[in-house]
Length: 457
Image (spheres, rainbow, N blue to C red):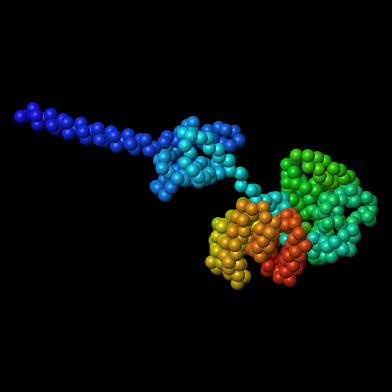
């Protein structure tokens, strides 16, 4: 009897096992193996660690990761009508395809590499320095009808270009001011009628420039910056005698003009009178540097001197030190904020302007500048993002116009950037002219106080 009961239990177990196997086999017969290999479209190299998702009809997606050979394995239902295949891999475009289930068992899937993001044009550091000097001198580019005239006949508070060879004639009677399309050296005609020659010099010449040239000192002046001459200087045209002009090829074959000059000793321009005024206040020169007297007042005066003579990098260092010595003085914070904005770093610009606003001696204009920056900062950052992701001319022009709007806090496009908006050059140029006129009418506008009271002639 016991033996019969055991035999029945064994028989029942066998029947259950056979039923399970039959069910599994029936399920197997309804599935098909599917193998995919993810490859780069151009090089055909396998892509490992790619994320693969397969959605059959409306079912929950199956998810896989490719192995070192770019391969993944899946089981698909024979009854599936459509299959959605999605592939994501770092550095490649997203792949998505919906269609009938692949029944051949395997396939190669090709991914396209991501295109590098379009480069947003960054302002050339030398162009930024030139714009800063133009702002300090309150000059704007001559109009077409003002071209081809001697410096005496172009308007005050304007700038243009002269060919270096024209300065080598004796006397200089055929000097003509051009719009710059032929290159040459930039000249600035200041509010009092004095004319300054602008160029770039090497480190040794720049050291003499800061200390003050002596009569007959030799000066090699370059029309553009390059690896051996990246210091921007501005000197009275009447203080130079330039017997020789030549063209040289510098970095990457760029051709620039060179003037070999001597300093005559005339120091009567606005820039030089500013330097002498500061030196008279501190007979030993730059006291904060020469005497190591780290007072905020002396540092601010040094920074203002550097700012208005175009040496912005030194001015920023000195304003930074001054802000650390006396956080309650608005001016260093305001000027640092202005400099950040001119470099398109609006996050740090906002921080420094807020610090200026909370300083004890902050004038009313700081509150207006902070509001202007806060109201427009998001729009500018969004415009920058649109330019990064699109080559659309209108997007670039919209950005330039927003930067003009933020000019009071330091953000302004250079003339080169105006030229990058085809068909909009005239409108961009008019905006620059209006901005220059605004600076002339309002001495507190923009960075005037960063250059000191002497700059507001």
